[in-house]
Length: 95
Image (cartoon, rainbow, N blue to C red; front, side, top):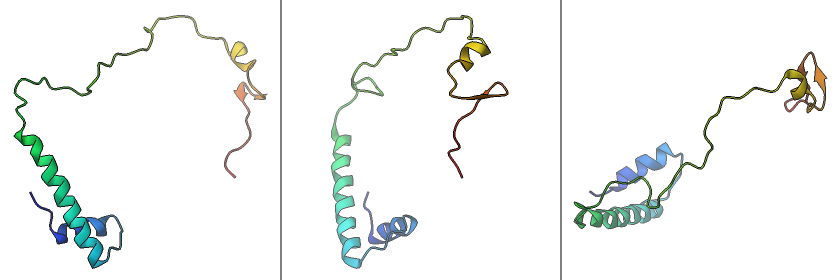
């Protein structure tokens, strides 16, 4: 697969980039070199390689969900800097 200069112009236009003719030629060459390098992966025999989503073993480190009683509204409101009508009152972040 090869990238043409027209492909580079199209992507640049979508990305709202103003490339000079020299930059378009440079990008075309660089992108084709990247694709050529990536195509080398097709030469590898991966028949015996199991599909993975991560190269290292990853396990969930979160605790098990356990049903337990919730805090009461009074307990929660003790942490409020200010309270108004049973709700936290905080400084406005938008004007």
